[in-house]
Length: 262
Image (cartoon, rainbow, N blue to C red; front, side, top):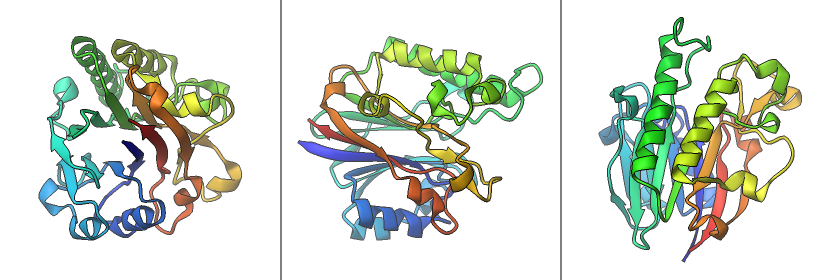
């Protein structure tokens, strides 16, 4: 069975429902992982998605912030969600396809502006969240699994517009990159996007603070698709729909895609 999966930080699913519908019509991924839905699950607008064939959903929600959801054309069973770091945030949900593949949708905390846990509680929460993720995947080694979402870290030098300029900026600091690597190693995860596109600058987020975001191109690759080692070689065709960042009243993230032949 082959399917296409996409991940997108939508930054309010109710505010940007029309944009989600547009993406589903134009690209028709079989599965769409959404982050920062900012809605209780019962208020997620499902009718339009269902009319396009996305009749399955697993989600965790909160009013006004956080929130993750997986929309699917394929049957999907809710297999839980972890409260990483005990923050009581809706930042993880997992669903299992009929072929046994488990899909994790994750939203790692942004971490605030100061990369010092002594001065910035949010940065400490981010590191704790990643540590808990590491320990979880060490105990529960993923098999036939995909993890997709806004992980709020750009790990490689070519995942940011200027490596040296961002070394002290949250999302690219060495301590965050190290924690990111530990999560990957604990689960044996493979970076599907960089497996397909191994070299060159690659971004999925551009700040709202930059009105000329496309020309300036001061982006970061914060959104990721990983696969467990037993299915990583089944992934191909990765891409980022950069133009979506420019849609009217759009999210500051662009959707990331990958195909899987399983």
